[in-house]
Image 1 (cartoon, helix red, strand yellow):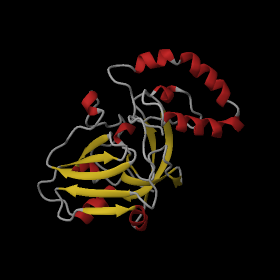
Image 2: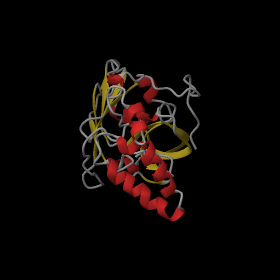
Image 3: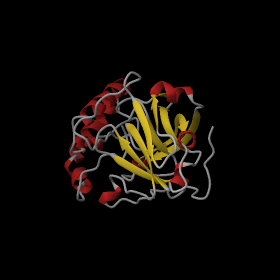
Length: 242
């Protein structure tokens, strides 16, 4: 997929860009042919799932996204075995299947997707369940102040404050670009936090725990902002949904 969910450690992004300059130029020429673009995107997705270095994420992609994963491999989930658990400081710990999530009211949010690497995919539609709906179903206790998100890649984590999580433009997304979210893009269900950089939108979402304080996520441990607001984000209220 294309998000900030994989970046090598210890300041390697610049080195990676230098290393892949020649590859990038050649690949750009390849994907310029429209009839090859679909195959190129599928190849990038497959390569990224076997590339813990993240180098494949620097190759050009005509769809705009980049493919990242911090895990060497990620199991595949579908309607038969996907589960989303909500626990922690809640009155009613809950587990949702994919069918459960699909049966809930769906909200569509259209927003630019922006990565800290500098790429942007404008006006990208996501559709799914408002995170606030799931939190209300579980019943957040008064001492609950934040959320920790876990992923079934077994590595990635993220966080939001409770106020951030209750915005109407924060979803457990089941669709992206009006299609079910693919495995490469973090499916079958992922977080989408519209007003923040894409590393906050955790892929392969498997768990939501309500906590009494913010627990920094995977990239925050490497110096990323805990509050990853986009520069143009309205931090006081909600973005419109459509």
